[in-house]
Length: 209
Image 1 (cartoon, rainbow, N blue to C red):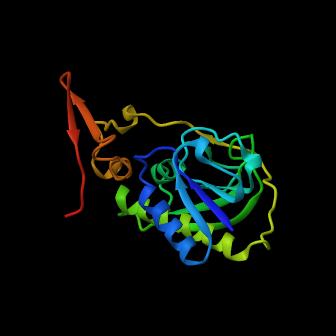
Image 2 (cartoon, rainbow, N blue to C red):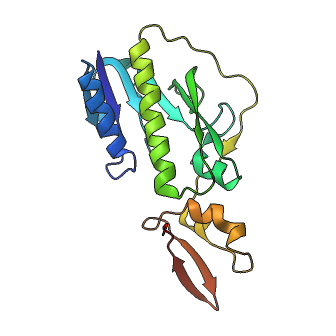
């Protein structure tokens, strides 16, 4: 089969996992490529849309258009579901493989897995689990092709909002323990934790000893 993987942000955290996925698909005998521009996507059997920042419109080009979203859809649609779940204190996060449609995060569901955390993982460890589960869901789908059943989403939709760098602000009146989950999901380079005291901004970076 021709299996294309689209990641439209060349600096995305998922790039290494997308490259591994393409290599594994090739090892399994498929014609697989990684593309970064929407205009580079051609006709094929399966298109995997991974961490895309723009809406891909040409869904007619491929038989299946797969998206991975870390929530129990239709709950938790929208932005950064893993981050929001960690902030809510969740350690078991559903991961859903579903069909892309013109309506965001609303397509039929093919399969699900669960990302299990222990509560100590920092962002790189969380992203590693996320990347590996993404790979496995897609590989399982490809291996089962064309025998992939689907179910429509049911229930009430809920939505997560887009996070900004301001969401990494710590409250100087709260303890580290109270804000540890926020520290866990901050990116030391792109959106580090910070606090403001006496009119000055201070950056805090976290790593395991």
